[in-house]
Image (tube, rainbow, N blue to C red; front, side):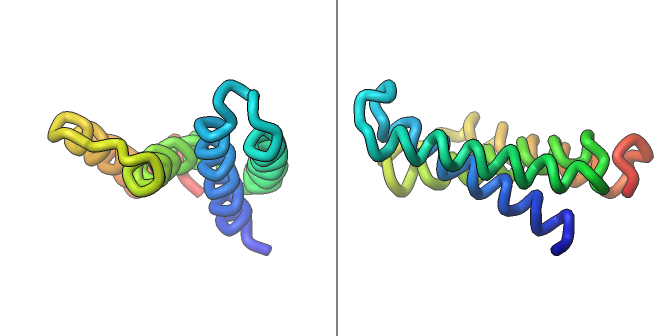
Length: 110
C-alpha cells in the first residue's frame, strides 16, 4: 500500500474523530466518544506508516490543509456551521500554502 494512501486514511480518520468529538459533547456520550478514541488511534497509526517514506513537513502540511477543508465541510453539512468570507479566504490561503510547499519547496521534497 502506498504511503500516500496511508496518509489519506490518516487524514480521513482524523476528520471522523474530530467530528465525533463534537458529537460526544465533552465525552459525555459513549458511542461518539468511542469513535473519537478509535478514529484517532487509526489516524496516528496510519500517519506513522506514511511517515516512513513521506517527509514529515510534507505529510503535516497535507494533514493540516486537507484536514481543515474536510472538517469545515463536515461542520457545514452536518452541524450547520456557516462560513463567512474571511473563513473562505483563510482556507484558500491554507490550500495555496500546501500546494506551494509540495510543488516548489526543497524542504519537503519527496
